[in-house]
Amino acid sequence: QFTTTIVTHISNLSAIYYLPIDLYYKPTHLLAMGSFNQHFRYIFILAFLLRIALPIASWLLNDGTQRFYQPDTSTYLRPATEWLNTGQFTTHNSPEILRPPGYSFFLLPGIITKWMVPLTITLQIILSLITLYFTLCLTTQITNSPKIKRSVGYLAAIEPISIIYTSHLLT
Image (cartoon, rainbow, N blue to C red; front, side, top):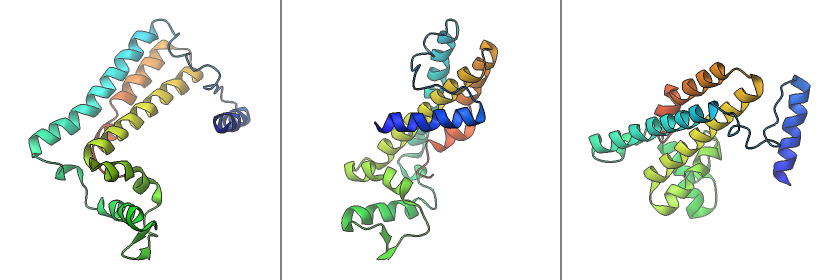
């Protein structure tokens, strides 16, 4: 029901802006694109390898997980930890107003399982690959040119910010 409502809203928006977005009704359209199908696999393999290679290399070269933390990572971890302990989204017993709760709640599975770095980075890589998938879906809806589809796919796969920030505990 919720998915249908979201898709209805997206369809209504696409009608307003005249974008032919119909992702819900043709979920397998990427797999039925003939020669692009092979490039689709290569794009995802390339994207996955690039996104997984950086954290693994960093882990091996830096002997630990501290490299994945950034100066303001604690401003996301502290409210999430206090939410688990007290049930309130606070920092030092005062409401957290600096950071929105989204990323702090995203960190909760890692905090709960005590696998903060590996689990969070894995989830970030998965979200990055989902973003790549939807980029390819949108490109497929906008153009019929296989060359443009391939170009967009490979550019999105090697996009440096997406690769680098999947290995940081930071939004």
